[in-house]
Length: 251
Ligand code: MF3
Ligand code: CO
Image 1 (tube, protein in one colour):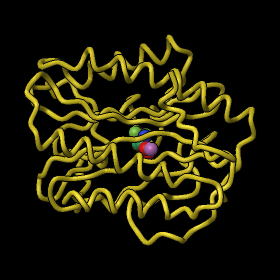
Image 2: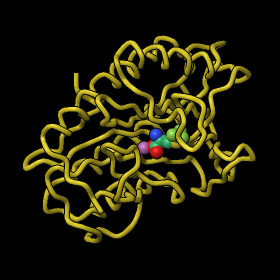
Image 3: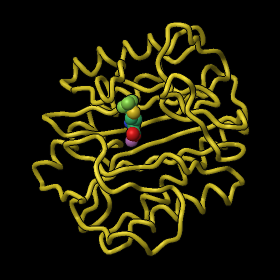
């Protein structure tokens, strides 16, 4: 069942999104060669606390951290580690879900470590972003859910990248994960019609190579099967009577 949020719930999600995106924007200043992903997680934990946000990842199915930090061929759900030192040229995806007064925002952003900018990696990041934007451009009341999915897939594949099938976007609200599941691929015109008050976390996961992924022995880390570099970007949005509202891009 897709829960329709009222204006009070949306206000709380919006506050969560605004506070969370300020933290994720600022983390770019810390992402430098030599820092570990565990240090980044600790910094995020301190910032969440300061902002009055509650981590929704810590404690979720036994997860111990407040963020997932995924480097290079790790697509999503990378576990922060004191042994994982970032180096110049690494592609780091930082994913955080947190709530304000019980309502969640979920977001992820990719960052390249240091000045070493590889053109292919930059293009991968740009297409993940444009695919998300094309998905959001379908997020209007009256459209079908899979209009979003199809728009994402079309953009990713038009540029020769792979779109991950095994993980999806999701509804969001009081819970980090609510109905519906939002595939990043598929035919348009299917699934429920979108209605004002529906809130979604849209999160294309795309690869330079094949789209197959596997979960590592730790039970969390998701890696590309062919070891190709992957990226991930995520925003929380709300369907309205007009433009979709992007809660994790508010200033
Ligand atoms: N924020 C994530 C998502 O979009 C990852 C959740 S896994 C967790 O679904 F355990 F770390 F919370
Ligand atoms: Co999510």
